[in-house]
Amino acid sequence: MRLEAITWERLTDATADRIAGLTAADGSPWLRVAVDGAPAAPTGELARDLAEALRILGRPALVVAAAGFWRPASLRYEYGKRDPDAYYDRWLDTGALWREVFDPLEPGPGGTGRVLPDLWDPETDRATRSPYAELPPGGVLLLHGALLLGHWFPFDLSVHLRLSPAALARRTDEGDRWTLPAFERYEDEVGPGGAADVVVRMDDPRHPAWHRPVP
Image (cartoon, rainbow, N blue to C red):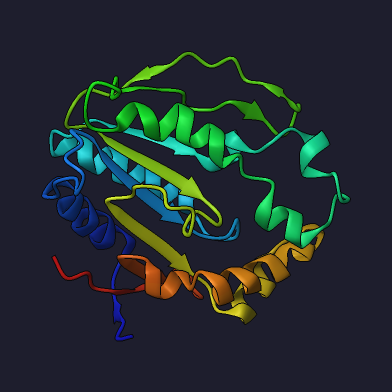
């Protein structure tokens, strides 16, 4: 894969332009975009920057954090608090994401545009009780977080913030290093570097490089 150096500002603007020019493959009036990466990667920051750039282009955007759809602790920790396979397979409530985020953005009469921005607070281990957000037709969902690819979510564009194994280990907090085998499995089973439409290498976050997407 050929990568070229780019600034975060240019990357954000170019990606927002790409998104604004897309049409959903399934005919949905909404676009669904993934910003995928390990917790050590700034997926939330990039998603928020993209949302602002899209608004400037006249496209409303809604940023949703995948961590707001983690399962309750009783389910996440069923096999212990540091089980990398559970982290990979069980922490993300994919059913809730389909029901509350993707189904409302489907084409046809089921598409209401009413998206729940989060369901569960993993810090308090309680339901968030957040109100639904109304995303108008032409709007863009920006879902960010870890291990998002490989679930058959109907993304119209996916961005993967890539860290080499050494950089991921170096930039992962000591208390979270038990998750590293989950990302090794993600590489083996999903191959996000090949599956994503846009790949950004950020071993040095001050000097990102990207694989330029082909429209």
